[in-house]
Image 1: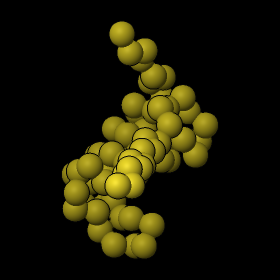
Image 2: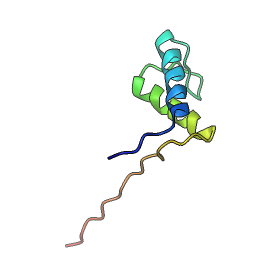
Image 3: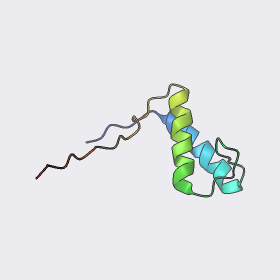
Length: 68
């Protein structure tokens, strides 16, 4: 069973989603964010930067092909 993360991270994501819904959220490049998944990623990133207990960034697993 997955463990629950701290409420502080959830509140941070909630604030960022509110900014997104009102149209005030901007990315690091200064452009308006139009994708809700990107808004959630920004909120989690900001929570990590503040030191909140958030799951780490997912990493891509590389698949090595066998040589024939």
